Length: 231
Image (tube, rainbow, N blue to C red; front, side):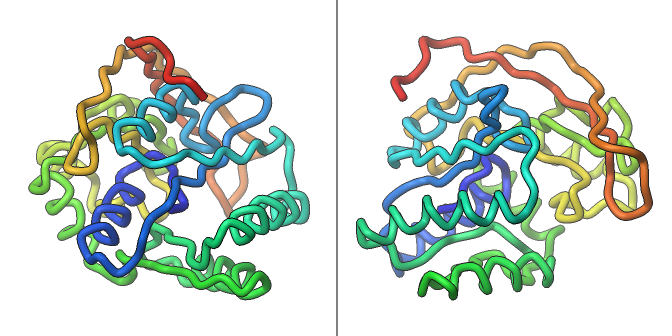
């Protein structure tokens, strides 16, 4: 399971485990090598360890340099996937919903290694997915929002019915266009909730402002409140 720690990953994993069609043998997560945090989401690795332990699946971390281009990224992923293939892995699960170019990229890279992609949420209605997330008992907080799409008030919030109702009309309910990212701390996948302690909220920019992709983000830091799970 390609695991970001967020809402879509949790929904996809839950759907696969309920289907009984696959044996899920682990979570695969990229971690920023310089800061020890989940890439893009910026969640501390300590919380990732607790998440994997609560779910009861082995965690496979892929350390990625802070400055990494696509050629480097592909080489790192290829090396890691080859090691998992040697252990018998045949499929890779993703939480993608409707980004055609991203799905095509993943399938092309997987095919080079004779792996098959699994997309349990593909082309599902994102409003219904958001509603199901709440109805199924998942609990999560926003850890990153794009300042082009959402203001500071949306970061560090609980993903509940009020949150989804308050999203602007131009924002996808599941944040599929990168509007926000989340960290799931409880739900039907978890043996127990992960206690969180709110930290500071900061603004960071990545690269020069442009029309192609977002560069400014608000991040909410969360701190583990239990002893770190062994790596």
